Amino acid sequence: MRRHGGGVAGRDRIDKGEGMIVKDLHGRTIDYMRISITDRCNLRCKYCMPQGIQQVSMNELLTYEEIETVCREAVKLGIRKFKITGGEPLVRKECTSLIRKIKEISGVEQVTLTTNGILLKEHLDAFLLAGLDAVNVSLDTLEEKRFEEITGFTGLRSVLSAIDAALECGLRVKVNTVLQPGINDGEWNRFVELAKSRELDVRFIEMMPIGAGRSCSVVSNKELLSKIQEAYPGVEKDERIHGNGPAVYYRIPGILGSIGFISAIHGVFCDHCNRIRMTATGELKPCLCFQDSISIRKALREGNREDVRTLIAEAIHRKPKMHCFEQLQQITENKKMVQIGG
Ligand code: SAM
Ligand code: SF4
Image (cartoon, rainbow, N blue to C red):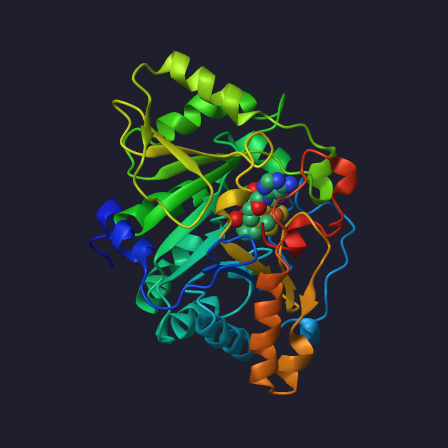
């Protein structure tokens, strides 16, 4: 199956939006929600899902019907874009049906997915039928042996072939890469080359001091950009809108795709923060950096939709002005990233 019209112009149209706009206390428009649907994963990336994490029981997870209710109420508050995440969202059965249901809600503009790509190819047709707008594939290395070292499993070839299959279907694809010094930082130019003949965005994400990431070293995006500028003459800022996030994009002559930087540490992006998060158990999180959360599950299970909406509004209201990733002692979040969804 193939979808047409997934180019940058299409993105512009989506991102302009219409209708209700909700601002938080700091004047930011909050129109994007990241929803984790599982804390389980088929990989074990060390910085995200270290060994020994206790998994939540199935009855603690929100059902798809409950998630759909959250989306319906969130839309009434101006949220129009949803990202489905995990753990690994594709390990939860019928994930495509949830995407279809969210897409059918009036007022929803965009439903996207972030995945490690292992199971993506076999579900692509179902995702297209469901109306998925774009996919982010997390991939930290282009070497099979290193893939196994980072993720604990083999599977690089499946991920790469899923990326190409998704592009062939006309789906917008972003590849998210976290570089670590002495592990995969030497591969930055191979990731740039990945975008050479593929119309995708490669985005370098700075390691955030959340969960096991706290004890990892960071590759500075600023330094990385300098290296790229040195190696590729003519690098220029790409001002086109690429999605919902804080990435800053660049174009390189001779490279079809764009290169993006999500500089969580070396470039605070909080002024433009547009999101709230919900964990798989229904904890609404105003900010990635802080433990502060609001449980929505009880209200959902009591069928109290007005309360659900009030709680979402409260989470928006409680968004802090900025994160404190540069002051480690002030970070209060102690969940692992796999339990939040990135
Ligand atoms: N399993 C899916 C995937 O890998 O895309 C979705 C969940 S995963 C938690 C989402 C993203 O979070 C991945 O791109 C992963 O690399 C990123 N991530 C996990 N821990 C991180 C950390 N400490 N700092 C920055 N990114 C992190
Ligand atoms: Fe799983 Fe994604 Fe975390 Fe890797 S980054 S362990 S694939 S949830």
